[in-house]
Length: 190
Image (tube, rainbow, N blue to C red):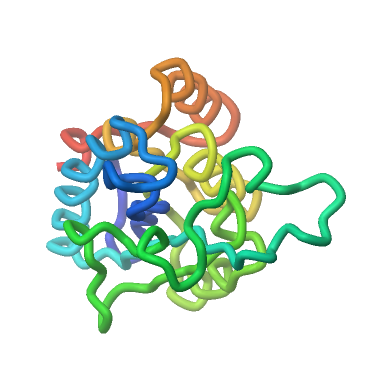
C-alpha cells in the first residue's frame, strides 16, 4: 500500500476530456479511453478517503496561438479542446462534483502554468499529489514534474494514465520515477 495522509493529499485528474477520451474526440487514443474506468475507480476511492479532488481541463481559445513565435499546440496536434465546445468537457463518466471538486482550466501542458493551482493546493495544506489522466508523457508528466519543482510530493498512478503508444507511457513513467517522484498502482493505493 502506498503511504499517504488523506489530510494533506490531493488527487489530480488530468485532462480526461471528450477530445482525448471519447472515440468522437479530435485527439482520441484508445489507451486514453481505456483509462476512464481506472480513473473513475480512483476518484471513487479518493472520495471515500476524503481526499481533495482536482480536475484539470486543457482549454484553448481559437486564437490562442495567433501571436506566438514558436509555441503553437495547434501546429503540433491540430485544433483541440476549444473553449465552449463539446471536446473540452470532461467525459460524462467522470463528471466532477460541482460543489466538492476543484476544476482548473489550463492553457497548456502543466496544470500549474498560468493557473491558481499552486495557491489552491497551498491554501488546502496539500503536500502530496496523486496524478492520473492523460496523456502520460505530456500533461500528466508536465503536471507531475511541475508539482515536484514546487516542492509537492508527486505520485503518478501508472495504471490510470492514457497515452498514444506504449513507448510514450513507459518513457513518462520511467522519467517521472527516476527524476522527481514515485509511481503507484490503483491496487497499491487500496
